[in-house]
Length: 352
Image (cartoon, rainbow, N blue to C red):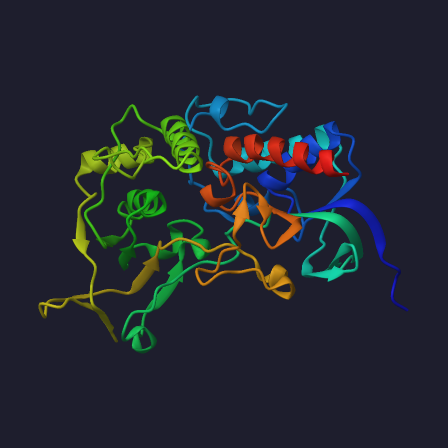
Protein backbone atom coordinates (compact mmCIF):
# COMPACT_ATOMS: atom_id res chain seq x y z
CA UNK A 1 0.00 0.00 0.00
CA UNK A 2 1.32 3.44 -0.94
CA UNK A 3 1.86 5.80 1.99
CA UNK A 4 -0.19 9.01 1.88
CA UNK A 5 1.62 12.18 0.85
CA UNK A 6 2.87 14.37 3.67
CA UNK A 7 2.33 18.14 3.68
CA UNK A 8 5.11 20.66 4.23
CA UNK A 9 5.50 24.36 3.71
CA UNK A 10 8.93 23.82 2.14
CA UNK A 11 10.82 20.78 0.87
CA UNK A 12 14.55 21.28 0.36
CA UNK A 13 16.11 18.77 -2.05
CA UNK A 14 19.75 18.12 -1.22
CA UNK A 15 21.57 17.99 2.11
CA UNK A 16 24.90 19.46 1.04
CA UNK A 17 26.17 22.95 1.81
CA UNK A 18 23.39 24.78 -0.06
CA UNK A 19 20.61 22.68 1.47
CA UNK A 20 22.00 23.14 4.99
CA UNK A 21 22.29 26.90 4.51
CA UNK A 22 18.67 27.02 3.33
CA UNK A 23 17.63 24.95 6.35
CA UNK A 24 19.40 27.29 8.76
CA UNK A 25 17.56 30.36 7.52
CA UNK A 26 14.21 28.63 7.06
CA UNK A 27 14.35 27.52 10.68
CA UNK A 28 15.18 31.06 11.81
CA UNK A 29 12.17 32.26 9.84
CA UNK A 30 9.89 29.80 11.63
CA UNK A 31 9.04 27.89 8.46
CA UNK A 32 7.92 24.24 8.47
CA UNK A 33 10.38 22.38 6.22
CA UNK A 34 12.14 19.10 5.57
CA UNK A 35 15.45 18.37 3.81
CA UNK A 36 15.59 15.27 1.59
CA UNK A 37 19.13 14.03 0.96
CA UNK A 38 20.01 11.21 -1.43
CA UNK A 39 23.29 10.46 0.34
CA UNK A 40 23.82 7.79 2.99
CA UNK A 41 25.85 10.13 5.21
CA UNK A 42 26.39 13.87 5.81
CA UNK A 43 28.82 15.93 3.77
CA UNK A 44 27.17 16.33 0.40
CA UNK A 45 29.44 15.95 -2.62
CA UNK A 46 32.52 16.62 -0.50
CA UNK A 47 32.48 13.04 0.79
CA UNK A 48 33.08 11.84 -2.78
CA UNK A 49 35.93 14.23 -3.67
CA UNK A 50 39.56 13.15 -3.81
CA UNK A 51 41.23 13.49 -0.39
CA UNK A 52 43.81 16.12 -1.33
CA UNK A 53 41.26 18.54 -2.81
CA UNK A 54 41.69 21.95 -1.18
CA UNK A 55 39.29 24.86 -0.83
CA UNK A 56 40.37 28.10 -2.45
CA UNK A 57 39.72 30.18 0.67
CA UNK A 58 40.76 29.88 4.32
CA UNK A 59 38.34 28.34 6.81
CA UNK A 60 37.29 31.74 8.14
CA UNK A 61 36.01 32.59 4.67
CA UNK A 62 34.41 29.22 3.91
CA UNK A 63 31.72 29.04 6.57
CA UNK A 64 27.98 28.53 6.53
CA UNK A 65 25.77 30.93 8.50
CA UNK A 66 25.89 30.71 12.29
CA UNK A 67 28.90 28.44 12.62
CA UNK A 68 32.50 29.27 11.73
CA UNK A 69 34.48 26.49 10.11
CA UNK A 70 37.33 25.45 12.42
CA UNK A 71 40.84 26.24 11.19
CA UNK A 72 42.64 23.07 10.04
CA UNK A 73 45.43 21.76 12.25
CA UNK A 74 48.04 22.72 9.65
CA UNK A 75 46.63 26.24 9.41
CA UNK A 76 46.22 25.92 5.64
CA UNK A 77 43.27 25.74 3.31
CA UNK A 78 40.69 23.11 4.34
CA UNK A 79 40.72 19.77 2.52
CA UNK A 80 37.69 17.64 1.59
CA UNK A 81 37.68 15.61 4.82
CA UNK A 82 37.75 18.80 6.88
CA UNK A 83 34.71 20.12 5.01
CA UNK A 84 32.81 16.84 5.50
CA UNK A 85 33.48 16.96 9.25
CA UNK A 86 32.31 20.57 9.36
CA UNK A 87 29.07 19.88 7.47
CA UNK A 88 28.38 16.85 9.67
CA UNK A 89 28.80 18.94 12.81
CA UNK A 90 26.71 21.75 11.31
CA UNK A 91 23.58 19.70 10.62
CA UNK A 92 23.81 18.04 14.04
CA UNK A 93 24.40 21.32 15.87
CA UNK A 94 21.27 22.89 14.41
CA UNK A 95 19.26 19.65 14.44
CA UNK A 96 18.10 20.23 10.91
CA UNK A 97 15.23 17.95 9.82
CA UNK A 98 17.08 15.75 7.34
CA UNK A 99 15.77 12.51 5.90
CA UNK A 100 18.36 10.25 4.25
CA UNK A 101 18.78 8.40 2.10
CA UNK A 102 15.88 9.96 0.24
CA UNK A 103 16.56 10.29 -3.46
CA UNK A 104 14.04 12.52 -5.21
CA UNK A 105 12.84 11.13 -8.51
CA UNK A 106 10.52 13.93 -9.57
CA UNK A 107 8.94 17.25 -8.72
CA UNK A 108 5.55 17.77 -10.34
CA UNK A 109 2.61 20.11 -10.08
CA UNK A 110 -0.23 18.94 -7.84
CA UNK A 111 -2.97 21.54 -7.59
CA UNK A 112 -1.80 24.52 -5.58
CA UNK A 113 1.26 22.61 -4.37
CA UNK A 114 4.30 20.86 -5.77
CA UNK A 115 4.50 17.09 -5.27
CA UNK A 116 7.98 15.81 -4.43
CA UNK A 117 8.30 12.09 -5.12
CA UNK A 118 11.19 10.32 -3.39
CA UNK A 119 12.10 6.79 -2.38
CA UNK A 120 11.24 7.87 1.19
CA UNK A 121 7.73 8.93 0.23
CA UNK A 122 5.92 11.86 -1.34
CA UNK A 123 5.56 15.38 0.06
CA UNK A 124 3.12 18.06 -1.05
CA UNK A 125 4.95 21.36 -0.62
CA UNK A 126 3.93 24.97 -0.96
CA UNK A 127 7.53 25.71 -2.00
CA UNK A 128 10.43 23.57 -3.15
CA UNK A 129 14.11 24.51 -2.89
CA UNK A 130 16.27 22.50 -5.28
CA UNK A 131 19.84 22.34 -3.96
CA UNK A 132 21.25 19.26 -5.67
CA UNK A 133 24.39 20.93 -7.00
CA UNK A 134 26.42 19.76 -9.99
CA UNK A 135 28.68 16.92 -8.81
CA UNK A 136 26.22 14.28 -10.00
CA UNK A 137 26.39 15.46 -13.63
CA UNK A 138 30.04 15.34 -14.73
CA UNK A 139 30.57 16.80 -18.17
CA UNK A 140 32.84 15.18 -20.77
CA UNK A 141 32.96 16.90 -24.17
CA UNK A 142 32.73 14.77 -27.29
CA UNK A 143 36.01 14.19 -29.05
CA UNK A 144 36.47 12.19 -32.26
CA UNK A 145 37.90 8.75 -31.62
CA UNK A 146 37.12 8.58 -27.91
CA UNK A 147 35.24 5.28 -28.29
CA UNK A 148 38.29 3.67 -29.92
CA UNK A 149 40.69 4.50 -27.08
CA UNK A 150 42.10 1.31 -25.56
CA UNK A 151 43.22 2.95 -22.33
CA UNK A 152 41.22 4.29 -19.39
CA UNK A 153 39.07 7.41 -19.42
CA UNK A 154 37.66 8.97 -16.28
CA UNK A 155 36.30 12.28 -15.06
CA UNK A 156 37.31 14.37 -12.07
CA UNK A 157 34.32 12.88 -10.22
CA UNK A 158 35.92 9.43 -10.52
CA UNK A 159 39.38 10.48 -9.37
CA UNK A 160 40.15 9.32 -5.81
CA UNK A 161 43.88 9.87 -5.49
CA UNK A 162 47.20 9.09 -7.21
CA UNK A 163 47.65 5.44 -6.15
CA UNK A 164 46.26 3.75 -9.32
CA UNK A 165 48.37 5.93 -11.64
CA UNK A 166 51.95 5.16 -10.57
CA UNK A 167 54.27 5.07 -13.61
CA UNK A 168 51.39 5.49 -16.06
CA UNK A 169 51.10 8.08 -18.82
CA UNK A 170 48.22 10.37 -17.90
CA UNK A 171 46.69 13.03 -20.17
CA UNK A 172 44.95 15.66 -18.00
CA UNK A 173 42.35 17.72 -19.88
CA UNK A 174 41.03 21.04 -18.57
CA UNK A 175 42.26 24.46 -17.58
CA UNK A 176 40.60 24.98 -14.19
CA UNK A 177 41.43 24.56 -10.54
CA UNK A 178 40.64 20.85 -10.38
CA UNK A 179 42.96 20.09 -13.29
CA UNK A 180 45.80 22.11 -11.76
CA UNK A 181 45.44 20.47 -8.34
CA UNK A 182 45.25 16.95 -9.78
CA UNK A 183 48.19 17.64 -12.09
CA UNK A 184 50.22 18.83 -9.10
CA UNK A 185 49.53 15.52 -7.35
CA UNK A 186 49.81 13.09 -10.26
CA UNK A 187 52.99 14.63 -11.65
CA UNK A 188 54.82 13.25 -8.63
CA UNK A 189 54.00 9.61 -9.46
CA UNK A 190 53.07 9.51 -13.15
CA UNK A 191 54.16 10.84 -16.53
CA UNK A 192 51.70 13.67 -17.03
CA UNK A 193 50.70 15.86 -19.96
CA UNK A 194 48.36 18.81 -19.45
CA UNK A 195 46.16 20.00 -22.32
CA UNK A 196 43.89 23.06 -22.26
CA UNK A 197 41.74 25.01 -24.70
CA UNK A 198 43.73 28.17 -23.92
CA UNK A 199 46.90 28.81 -21.92
CA UNK A 200 46.15 28.39 -18.20
CA UNK A 201 46.52 31.47 -16.02
CA UNK A 202 47.44 31.30 -12.37
CA UNK A 203 46.14 34.01 -10.08
CA UNK A 204 48.77 35.90 -8.08
CA UNK A 205 49.75 34.08 -4.91
CA UNK A 206 47.98 36.61 -2.71
CA UNK A 207 44.64 36.24 -4.54
CA UNK A 208 42.30 33.46 -3.42
CA UNK A 209 38.62 32.66 -3.10
CA UNK A 210 37.95 35.73 -0.99
CA UNK A 211 38.74 38.02 -3.90
CA UNK A 212 36.85 35.78 -6.34
CA UNK A 213 33.72 35.87 -4.16
CA UNK A 214 33.87 39.67 -3.96
CA UNK A 215 34.27 39.79 -7.73
CA UNK A 216 31.27 37.49 -8.27
CA UNK A 217 29.17 39.71 -6.00
CA UNK A 218 30.15 42.85 -7.92
CA UNK A 219 29.45 41.14 -11.24
CA UNK A 220 26.00 40.05 -10.06
CA UNK A 221 25.09 43.53 -8.82
CA UNK A 222 26.33 45.13 -12.02
CA UNK A 223 24.32 42.72 -14.16
CA UNK A 224 21.15 43.46 -12.17
CA UNK A 225 21.76 47.18 -12.72
CA UNK A 226 22.33 46.70 -16.45
CA UNK A 227 25.95 47.78 -16.15
CA UNK A 228 29.16 46.28 -17.47
CA UNK A 229 30.30 43.59 -15.06
CA UNK A 230 33.84 43.89 -13.67
CA UNK A 231 36.25 41.08 -14.51
CA UNK A 232 39.58 39.79 -13.34
CA UNK A 233 41.21 40.99 -16.54
CA UNK A 234 44.62 39.43 -16.91
CA UNK A 235 44.84 38.17 -13.34
CA UNK A 236 44.09 34.54 -14.11
CA UNK A 237 41.73 31.64 -13.44
CA UNK A 238 43.55 29.18 -11.16
CA UNK A 239 44.01 29.79 -7.44
CA UNK A 240 47.61 29.14 -6.42
CA UNK A 241 46.98 26.95 -3.38
CA UNK A 242 50.10 25.42 -1.84
CA UNK A 243 50.24 22.21 -3.97
CA UNK A 244 49.76 24.24 -7.15
CA UNK A 245 52.52 26.66 -6.18
CA UNK A 246 54.82 23.72 -5.48
CA UNK A 247 54.04 22.22 -8.89
CA UNK A 248 54.65 25.59 -10.52
CA UNK A 249 58.03 25.79 -8.84
CA UNK A 250 58.84 22.28 -10.11
CA UNK A 251 58.04 23.49 -13.62
CA UNK A 252 55.22 21.05 -14.34
CA UNK A 253 52.40 23.57 -14.85
CA UNK A 254 53.01 23.72 -18.58
CA UNK A 255 50.06 23.04 -20.85
CA UNK A 256 49.82 21.86 -24.44
CA UNK A 257 47.01 22.99 -26.78
CA UNK A 258 43.90 20.83 -26.87
CA UNK A 259 44.25 17.79 -29.11
CA UNK A 260 41.88 17.35 -32.06
CA UNK A 261 41.17 13.63 -31.79
CA UNK A 262 41.78 10.53 -29.74
CA UNK A 263 43.59 7.51 -31.19
CA UNK A 264 43.46 3.93 -29.92
CA UNK A 265 46.74 4.49 -28.06
CA UNK A 266 46.72 8.21 -27.27
CA UNK A 267 45.85 11.56 -28.77
CA UNK A 268 46.63 13.51 -31.94
CA UNK A 269 46.78 17.20 -32.80
CA UNK A 270 45.69 18.94 -35.98
CA UNK A 271 49.29 19.37 -37.11
CA UNK A 272 49.78 15.60 -37.19
CA UNK A 273 51.74 15.25 -33.97
CA UNK A 274 50.71 12.50 -31.55
CA UNK A 275 51.29 11.46 -27.95
CA UNK A 276 50.70 8.03 -26.41
CA UNK A 277 48.89 7.75 -23.08
CA UNK A 278 47.39 5.15 -20.79
CA UNK A 279 44.78 7.37 -19.14
CA UNK A 280 42.75 10.40 -20.20
CA UNK A 281 41.49 12.32 -17.18
CA UNK A 282 38.72 14.76 -18.08
CA UNK A 283 38.77 17.73 -15.68
CA UNK A 284 36.08 19.42 -17.72
CA UNK A 285 33.55 20.49 -15.16
CA UNK A 286 29.95 19.67 -14.31
CA UNK A 287 26.42 20.59 -15.28
CA UNK A 288 23.48 21.34 -12.95
CA UNK A 289 21.80 18.18 -11.65
CA UNK A 290 18.22 19.07 -12.51
CA UNK A 291 16.77 15.80 -13.78
CA UNK A 292 14.28 15.62 -10.92
CA UNK A 293 12.70 18.84 -12.18
CA UNK A 294 12.05 17.50 -15.69
CA UNK A 295 8.25 17.09 -15.17
CA UNK A 296 7.97 20.85 -14.69
CA UNK A 297 9.43 21.52 -18.17
CA UNK A 298 11.30 24.66 -17.19
CA UNK A 299 14.70 24.38 -18.85
CA UNK A 300 15.80 26.70 -21.64
CA UNK A 301 17.96 25.81 -24.64
CA UNK A 302 21.11 26.08 -22.48
CA UNK A 303 19.81 23.50 -20.03
CA UNK A 304 19.25 26.05 -17.28
CA UNK A 305 16.06 27.21 -15.63
CA UNK A 306 15.51 30.98 -16.00
CA UNK A 307 15.29 32.62 -12.59
CA UNK A 308 14.70 35.90 -10.86
CA UNK A 309 17.23 35.58 -8.08
CA UNK A 310 16.61 32.01 -6.94
CA UNK A 311 12.95 31.84 -7.97
CA UNK A 312 12.08 30.04 -11.21
CA UNK A 313 10.35 32.49 -13.54
CA UNK A 314 7.89 29.96 -14.95
CA UNK A 315 7.19 28.24 -11.61
CA UNK A 316 7.31 30.70 -8.69
CA UNK A 317 6.88 27.91 -6.13
CA UNK A 318 10.33 26.59 -7.07
CA UNK A 319 13.65 28.07 -5.94
CA UNK A 320 17.11 26.97 -7.05
CA UNK A 321 20.15 27.35 -4.82
CA UNK A 322 23.81 26.54 -5.22
CA UNK A 323 24.20 25.96 -8.94
CA UNK A 324 26.39 28.95 -9.77
CA UNK A 325 26.16 32.67 -10.31
CA UNK A 326 22.83 32.34 -12.15
CA UNK A 327 21.22 31.34 -8.83
CA UNK A 328 23.08 33.89 -6.72
CA UNK A 329 26.62 35.31 -6.70
CA UNK A 330 29.10 32.48 -5.99
CA UNK A 331 26.21 30.36 -4.70
CA UNK A 332 28.14 27.17 -5.49
CA UNK A 333 30.63 28.07 -2.74
CA UNK A 334 30.18 27.61 1.00
CA UNK A 335 30.01 31.29 1.85
CA UNK A 336 28.06 32.18 -1.28
CA UNK A 337 25.39 29.55 -0.59
CA UNK A 338 24.81 31.00 2.87
CA UNK A 339 24.37 34.56 1.67
CA UNK A 340 21.99 33.54 -1.09
CA UNK A 341 20.02 31.25 1.23
CA UNK A 342 19.26 34.15 3.53
CA UNK A 343 17.50 36.06 0.77
CA UNK A 344 15.71 32.90 -0.37
CA UNK A 345 14.32 32.16 3.11
CA UNK A 346 13.21 35.75 3.60
CA UNK A 347 11.31 35.69 0.31
CA UNK A 348 9.62 32.36 1.02
CA UNK A 349 8.66 33.32 4.59
CA UNK A 350 7.07 36.54 3.32
CA UNK A 351 4.83 34.54 0.97
CA UNK A 352 3.71 31.91 3.48
